[in-house]
Length: 283
Ligand SMILES: [Cu+2]
Image (cartoon, rainbow, N blue to C red; front, side):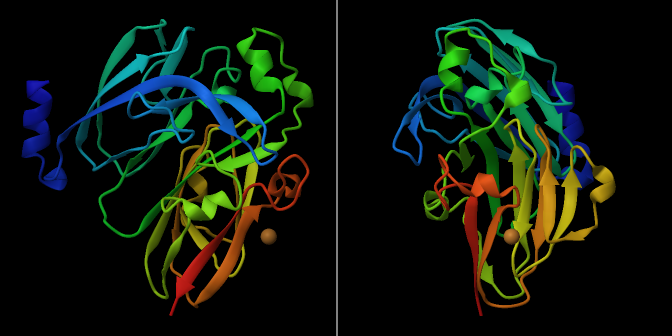
């Protein structure tokens, strides 16, 4: 650890690097979906109080993440930062400790890979963002859920993933119109701003996002690095993928962003209570 810190302090490219202490608590409760039903739900929260939004960790390049993950649930869970740290078991009431240095700008997905995707489908998935800028930044953690399936997983029943047809679609645990009330999700800015949108798909379906009014530039993808540099008005985000998008709005207005798989703009078949938000740009 001391050698790591000396390395971090001596490297001129990462002068702002620090040791960042974070804790994640695996908590089980429920969220209320657009139909008014309660959906059993688990998240990685930053404290012992439950919210339906997974905690997000934001670092600078060179930062040493000193992370504790505490399992407050009655069941075993696993934890991994995909492609970065191995899957580790955390028994009920137990904790694990991870120390990892993040050298590059980008985005990482963390989730529960136990019996994948069953445990992750309960809600256990979030993002780590590494960025060396202070431009306006927004965060979309996308998931979808199938009615009754979370109960089945929690009861240890078999889930038929081959015939998966989810009913509820969320960003940061919220559906339209509540996404626009989340200041971390609702993109706002002014013409000419440099805006970053950090997106993870911690669900099980592919989510092709469609931007009306603007194009975005793909700045990073954990799955398709060959997409970097492309200007897109729609970008498919795959399960367990993280993508960084840059938007420089060329005009004022309020324009929709939605999932182009149109069923996802619904909640229990009611439009537009699903994965639907708007970008609001002032002159
Ligand atoms: Cu569209």
